[in-house]
Length: 192
Image (cartoon, rainbow, N blue to C red; front, side, top):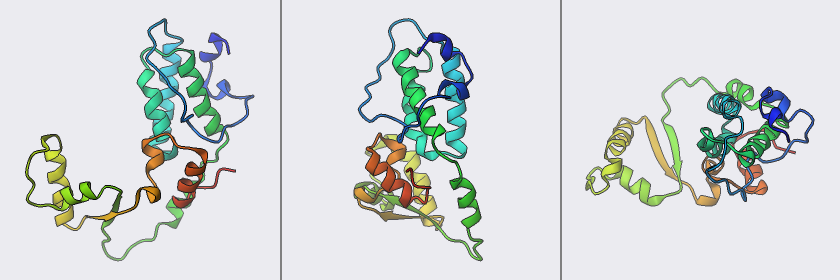
């Protein structure tokens, strides 16, 4: 891939390439670039576009975007290759799930609390413990907010086993099998 390609339109970067089945290679080991940057402005522009896409329609790319955005200030060829992989993944997917989600949301006659599933019993215990001991100062403010939401019935906390935790693709790189399982469980179109 030539450097001039990095300056092109994001749609053209992977125009003739075969789509991939995962947004990020779990075995990738990206590191901070200590050399010259390769088209930093182009990289930043594409990262901005995929952040917008992630925020509004594509939660399945959250982990890849969070990893790739760390290198926006000084990208090298490896960073561009990983970004190109993300674009190849997006090229192969249809973003119909948001439309289906909006169409399937029922209009509730009464308020229903938002159910938050958590795979950490310790975190649930801390959130439900109204006699917070203050030893974890870095979460004091968030604990107070969660406590108020629980007390007001706005949210409910439920334990879910780690292997059933559907948000894993949003927080870490996963294998193809786990991405398929969690995508299906979230109601997303299967990636075939």
